[in-house]
Image (cartoon, rainbow, N blue to C red; front, top):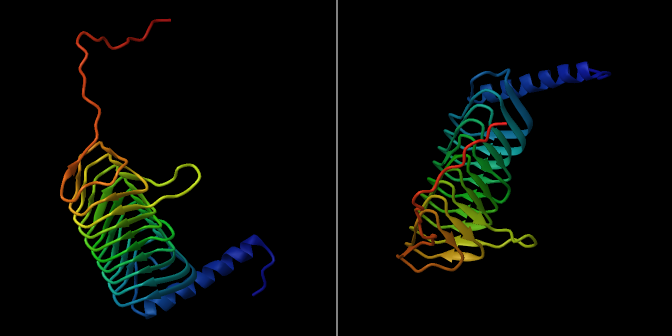
Amino acid sequence: MGINSKVQLAELERIWQEEQALRLLTQGVTLADPARLDVRGKLVCGRDVEIDVGCIFEGEVHLGNRVRVGAYTVIKNAIVNAGTQISPYSHIESAEVGDNCSIGPYARLRPGTKLHKDVHIGNFVEIKNSEIANGSKANHLSYIGDSTVGSRVNIGAGTITCNYDGANKHRTIIEDDVFIGSDTQLIAPVTVRRGSTIGAGSTITRDTAESALTLSRAKQVTIAGWQRPTKQKK
């Protein structure tokens, strides 16, 4: 077929995508709607893979056995291993996801991310250039960048690794069995030692002690008789 207009280009693209969908269906992949799938590269699937509507696969993507990909997910140059569930609207690029992980919805795995087995990355969590070991989880509203995270770590909602000082990137190390309370800032370079607990609302600037509680908070103050400002009439 010759292509002499944007209309003809779009028509040929649809024919190409229909061929990709047919190839996947023939291999045993379950497609919620073969007409709503875009493969822009090479997609290799294992057994019993399920792909919902509106998903985009770019570059070279490998999906292991029993992987489920939720609606409107974008995966680029990534490996997703067996049994992993990806919830809708997640973005994965140049990352490796281990067996039986749970991703999303609305999660973003950026280049250099490596997740081991049974890792949970929840809604509005962003991971960049970080390795997270078996059984760890960050379920809500967190940023983990330039970090090495051990096994069985719980990262509370709103936790961020402050990895950039305006000129250079620095690494955060979180060892095994750490519990990090919500709304914590880890100022890299810093190491959170094995078994540490970080109290919610803390800013951590120095290495913590093993199996101890570390927190940093301003003293709470109540001002008696204070009046909230009222809007002045114009």
